Length: 307
Image 1 (cartoon, one colour):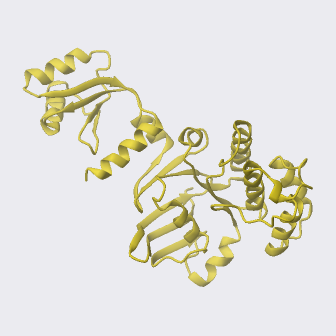
Image 2 (tube, rainbow, N blue to C red; image 1 turned 90 degrees about the vertical axis):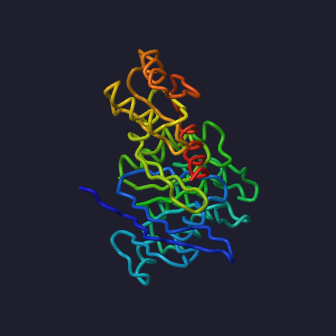
Image 3 (cartoon, rainbow, N blue to C red; image 1 turned 135 degrees about the vertical axis):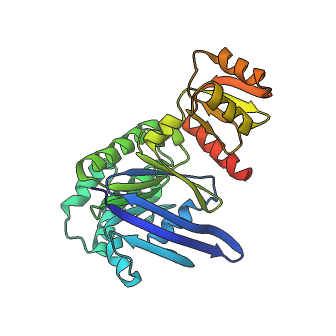
């Protein structure tokens, strides 16, 4: 059964005269991992801060675990672990002391959890070192451990792989997948490393200039990025009408930039070209193509620019 654990309706936020979020409406389902994608300044971190109550929206509504009353949301946020921007820590303390301080502030009595988390994030051998002497990657690991202290039902992570070496990236990925698999933890994760997200998430949310431009499942994205005939023509409307009538297929997609993806006739490209030429459709570009997540993201952003 579908269970929505987080929902926003028309969230908006201005900083002075700049609108950084505009009518943000999203739904996150229990047990799914959402990749949050956007350029720098697109509004990802601001939305995450609003969801965690660190910044107040100017308008709109948030619902967490079926609760939307503002005065009750703080209680629901205790079920969410987060790491947004630079993790907060006491530089003069070691990792264990930092986690204990965070545990005390959350009123969590489980002292054994600290040792478990240190081992889980790979800091058990560095737990006595002062955090001010940590590398960026070690600080990220500590931030992830802090996010896991409340044994969350949901995680909100802003660039969790920042500063991690390739081995650390794999470790964090495996940890998050394990939590999702074993505890059904819902996750919202922003990252500029799109290929890493592809190995982790079930769904994507794309934001551009404060507007959600698409929410799409990994399966849907794979279908859209599958091998296809790429066409740019003088008249997309006439081209698609011709394809439907004379090639007897509707298995195509017209993109925001008016290019066409045709998923049939991959083994008979000449037939497609001949059909269009015979019906006076001017072809500007044609190729057999297959897209990556990066290609799709860039195309989505460019499509917004052409609106």
